[in-house]
Amino acid sequence: MAKRRHNMAQFDGVAQRVTDRAFNEFGLEAEEGFGIDPVTIGLIFTNLIPMILNCFQKNDEVPAAEVYGRVRKMNQRNPRALKKRLRRSIIIQSQKDGVILTDDQIEKMSDAVIAEAMAATENEVYSLSQDSRGYECIQG
Figure 1 (cartoon, rainbow, N blue to C red):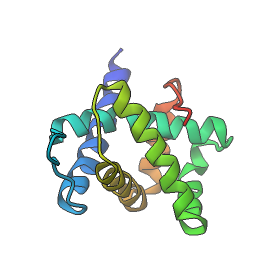
Figure 2 (figure 1 turned 90 degrees about the vertical axis):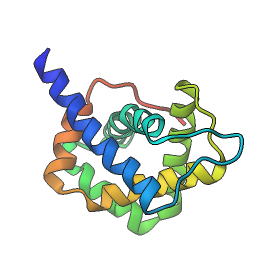
Figure 3 (figure 1 turned 30 degrees about the vertical axis):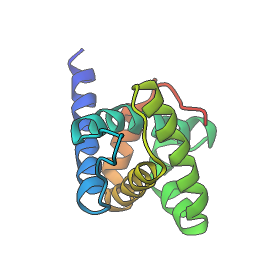
């Protein structure tokens, strides 16, 4: 049981960094009629990150050790496809969490996830990928 809490703490830390990026670097803010706050976004990211990593491993048949390179390669070769994939995942997860987002908010959130993925170390991505096994894979 202690291992599970450690895993969630690791995802919480990444979710907080992505949330900070979304608000500080990409200008995510509440739009009229769409109340959104950092805590809500952090919860979405905490649930979303392990699911995205698990999908890379299951759907793309990428071992945890190769997720880091795979995401970087996807961002280099076809950043629009990577962003589209993330956008779908964010929409699905936010709906599950009962949060309605605007297109602009979804765009800024996907930008923040990509920026954090590009800033992460290979060891961190490997560790998160290992910890994401067993989570639901969002099919978008």
